[in-house]
Image 1 (cartoon, rainbow, N blue to C red):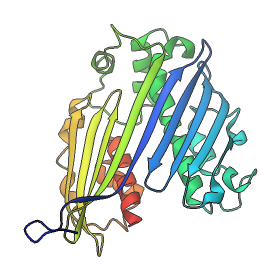
Image 2: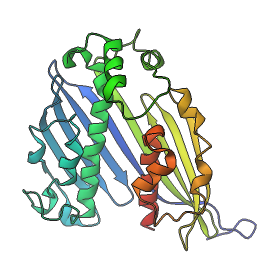
Image 3: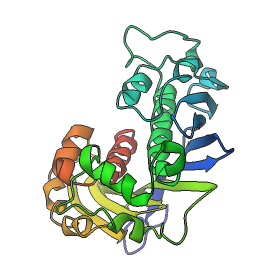
Length: 296
């Protein structure tokens, strides 16, 4: 490879994307789709649920490109049908979902002992659930809420997954324009793109960009190839709803410098980002980048 001023040029060595969208498909049902495309993998899922109860009525999956070609195929995750796309224990059901790509039909004794390909499918189902929860905002009548403010008050009273001080009951509907434009068919859109860039020396830059119907943000960090130690780190908001989202943008960046990507867990990242007072979107972006970087 040619050099520029004695240094190798920048080169993308790995990339990938998650995509998630939620659509109302009838008066009674919506569907959450998600797919993952990376250098090594292509997979997708489709999760259909009832608008009023969020009961799952269909749960398709597909693996079309994978390191283990025997894992390729399409099918239905029967165990999820009849489950809820909303209840608090839905994540646990997906974490033990049998590896249908390996012919499993019942919960394995060790749910963690599944193929990397099936771990991706489980994560895509979780993506669909996250999307369904975001889309609920535009299914208020189906869900039995009187209006937008009734829904916001319900969330602030007992189930919002993050803390706002003071509470912002009317800020969110104003921010998303729900008073004058209420979505009917296209309920939610999201993508997360990841790139690993060889800097031409002993370091790699990991860049993650996140864009959905309500947020736009990115994170970038540099780590050493040899030992995985992070030498530079930054967070950036381009479009976020609340003042509190902006306040912590730079305050947590320095906490990551000196840490090892091979030792960081998702729980560690959550604590560094601020726990329930932080941003779970940034947790997902950083963790997915670290997962990709760890494969080098």
